[in-house]
Image 1 (tube, rainbow, N blue to C red):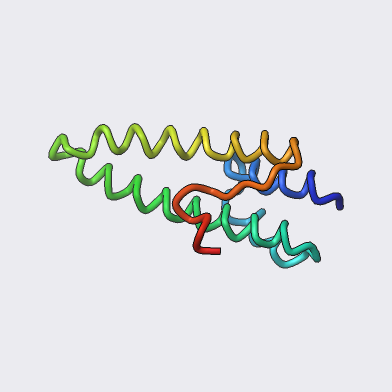
Image 2 (cartoon, rainbow, N blue to C red):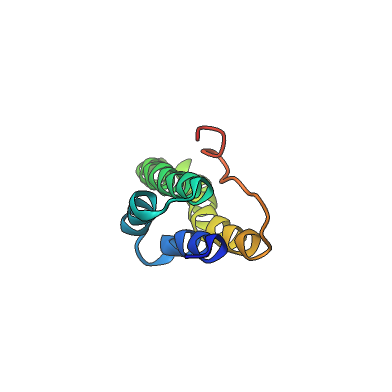
Length: 101
């Protein structure tokens, strides 16, 4: 599979299978760039789920509501940016977890 479309699928998987697709692409892909992007996508989704959970718990104290809104927007917007960058053949790292991998 062409690297560009593999990266697009990994980014788009955030909307339909945020855990399964990155793991599958990590296991079946032979290209290092696709593997790195799959790990970043998986880590980003995990971190965002944890942050959304913490913000939703804190929203009972009113402090977490702005964070909850920001984290939900990030969970939607960041994969879209990744899809656009993958279609442009640009190198791109996920925020928060991009430097970890």
